[in-house]
Amino acid sequence: MTFLLSLMLFLHIVGVAVIVGTWIYTMKTPTVTVSQFWAAVLMLVTGLVMVGIREMSGGHDSLNFAKIGVKFVILLVVLVAAFIGMRKTQRGEPVSTGLAHAVGGMALINAAVAVFW
Image (cartoon, rainbow, N blue to C red):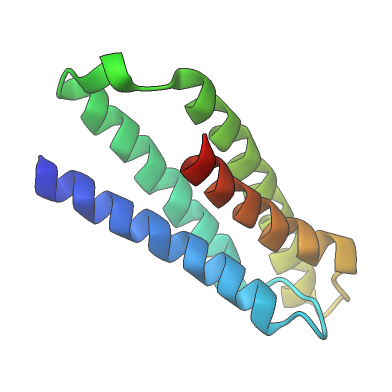
C-alpha cells in the first residue's frame, strides 16, 4: 500500500506541475489547454484514491477532513474552469484571461494549501 500511495502522490504532483507549468508557459497569451483539463482530472482521481487508501489502512486519525474538503472545492473550481476553457479552445473561441488565470492560479493555491496547512 505504501508504494501505491507514493505512486498516487507522484501522479498528483505531476498533475499540479502540468497545470501550473502550462499556465506559466502561456502567460503572455493566456489560454487553457486540453492537457490542463486532463491534469485536473488526474489530480481529482489520485486525490480521491489517496484519501481512500488512508481510510482503508486505518490512518484516518491523522486525516484532516477540513483540509481535504477545501482542497476538493478548489480542485472542482479548477476542473470546471479548465473544462470551460478547453471547450472554448476546441471551438476556436477566445479564452478570457480571467478564466485562464483561474485555472493556473487556483491550482497553485491548491498546492499551497497542501504544503502550508
